[in-house]
Length: 233
Image (cartoon, rainbow, N blue to C red; front, side):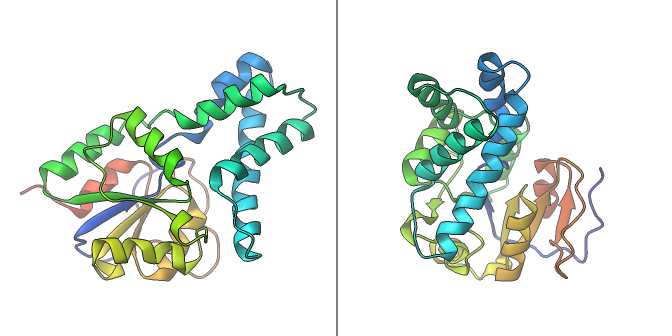
């Protein structure tokens, strides 16, 4: 898939990345799951992720916030039960630990390094709670490249609630249009666009856009398209 044609691209002053699915491959857990449940690893990973996002919306909309780590565990338990997979306590903990050390997509380090060399501030705004993010960022070696690392835990509202997106503009002290928000989750890119961010949807799977009357500023197949917003001088 090629990048969508730019619509008079704005010139952002900073970047905010989503974490899970954007910088970190949430389905890298499928490798461990497949070792334990041959033939079912990918199905478990996909259902686990779907329920994780569903639970975040459910508790946020109902005003019954729970930390993302707890929702992730609940989603794993549901997915395993639904697929008829016997998940003992030790195996559950092992799969949860995989979520602390998700693999980064191969182009991430290159993009973050290039942003640093171009003097562009890059941060993260994620549904993950602070301990999850701290371990993931440190494990991937991204500590020196991501600042700020923002968690919705501070407002106890998950994306796409405007209170979650407002964390970015407050931390960067910039209007939303001057911040490039990058996500591989189509719903997140739309939510950020509604909030007012300049947006990039990293559509790795070539999915159709959700027909909700809003499109991200730009769509591309991988994170390297971030650099198109910040030409090297």
